[in-house]
Structures are given as C-alpha cells and as structure tokens.
Image (cartoon, helix red, strand yellow):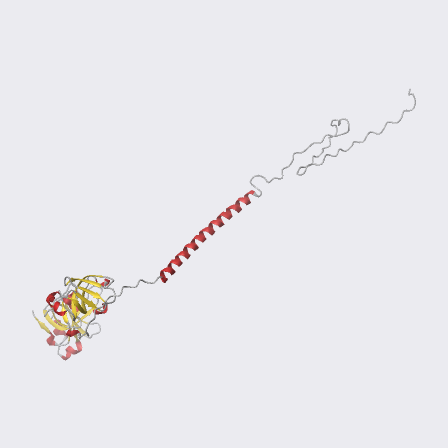
Length: 326
C-alpha cells in the first residue's frame, strides 16, 4: 500500500549539446560523432566525449606546387644572362676590330726619305749615248758625268731604289724615285747619269727595260729546229731557216700552203701565200715534191701560241725564197 499519492516523476533531462572550443587559426575544429545505438551510456553530466579527426596539412605535396616553377625561373634567368654576356662580348670584339681598322686607315703612311739627285746636263739622243756593259769596263771612267746606256745583270734591288749589279761587278745604280725590289735577278738595260765609275743615277723604273736572255744571243745566218726560242724572240723580223720537210698541206681557209718541218720543242711551218705563189708559177705539185728533202727557206718570222707546242712560221711568197739542199 502506498502511503498516498506520489508526485509524478520529473521528465528526463535533455542532453546538453557541448560546444567545442573555438579552433586555433589554421586548424580544423574537432568534429563530434554521435555514438551509435546501443553504445555505452555517456558518463554522468551528459557530456559526450569529442572525437578529433587528423589535421589536414595545406602545404603543397612534395614535387609539386611552386618549387618547380621557382627552379625553372632561376634556370631561365641564368640562360638569359649567359646569352646576354656572350652577345656583349661579341659586340665588344667587333667594335674593337672596327676601331683597329679605322685607326689603321687613319694612320698616316711613313714618308720615304727624300733622295738626293745629282745635277745633270741636258739629255742627248739615245743614239748619242755610250753603251756600257761588262765587255767594255774600261769605258766607264771616260763617261763619268755623262748620260749612258748600261746593260747588266742585277744581283739585288731594294725598296729604297738601290741596285747592286752582279755583272758588271762592283757596279751600282740608284733610282731618284721608286722601288727596285722587283728587279732582283733580272737582266736589264737602263739609261742614266754616270755619277762615278761605279754609280749610275737613274730617274725611275721607266728608264729600265728587262731583257729576255734569248734576245742577247748573237744572230745567225741560218737557224735550225734547235733555235726555237730564239726564233720566237725574232718574230716579225726576217731570217733563214734550214730543215727537213716532213709533210705538206693546205690551210683550212685555202689561203696558204704549209711545208711542215720536223721539230721537237716547237712546230716549224713554212707558210706560202697561195695567191702570190701562183703568180710566181709555184704550184701545189711542186711543193709536194719537197716532202722528205732538206731545204733552206728565207722569210719573215711569225709566231702563234699553241697548247702543246709553240708554232713558228717562216712566211714566203716567191720561188727564190726556198732552196733545195738534198
């Protein structure tokens, strides 16, 4: 039995929601996870223990983010600096070369020392001058203080115009103007003023003629196929040639008969004018009979440069210009 009416049971206390403390800046606030059904009754006081989740880092993952871009930027900057440095060095070098060229152009040329020229008398005609060489050395002293023609072989010539002869020995020449360097070893003829027995004053290189040694060979009454070089030097002059006729032919333009002589160093052609020989009653048949025979042929010498052998012509237009020897 009850002792009387009981006061009603108080309603169950509502669970109080626990507000977690504010999270610190940069941290994720802990999240409360409700206990599943049938879980253990929360401890007294109605507070549910909070379950904290791991803090997620906001830093970029390894190998990603800004770090590669920073490295690439540094590399690009280094490459750009290198190119700039190389270009600058090239520009400085080109500028230096240009400056050196300008300085070289602007630098005044060294003036040659003026050469003292001896006073001379009025120059006479060439034919009135004595002709001197090693063959008449005794005439040198007699022609001091006169205009002369000198022939000789130069040993050396220099830029200052000094010439030292090999022949005549102990003879020198001096140019008033110009260089004589190109005359070393040459055989020459020159016109000048005899300052002394061993010194000739020459106005300039225009008074000097370089001589081909062939031109100094003595002239012959009769030349053969061994005198090719000398016959070339005598072109446009008259000479007598002796040789054996190897063949006969007519020129391509039908204007000349050719008597072709034997020869090794040069080709030797007797060239007869067909039109003029016909007037002399010299026929093709007559000239063909000369093949295999040795003849003398007199005429004006001609010359033609050939690829293999130089050709010497003995031009004739009369019958009495050739003579059969055998």
